Image (tube, rainbow, N blue to C red; front, top):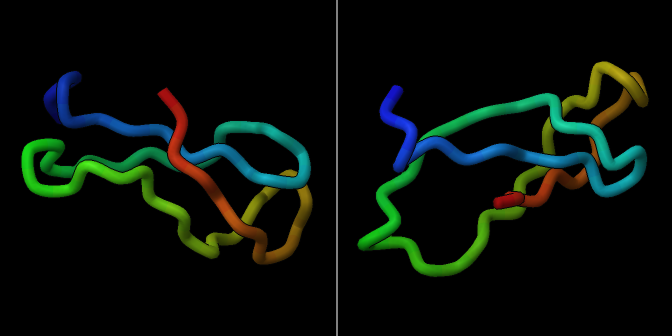
Length: 51
């Protein structure tokens, strides 16, 4: 994956980074928020895009 398109997802409860993805930053200007499984909390939580 290209570093300029790489984004990290941080769990909103435990604040740990557990997921990585990529996005086209020219098209999508806002930060993504997705419900994903957190392996540290062991449940589905809201994950927010970080820097």
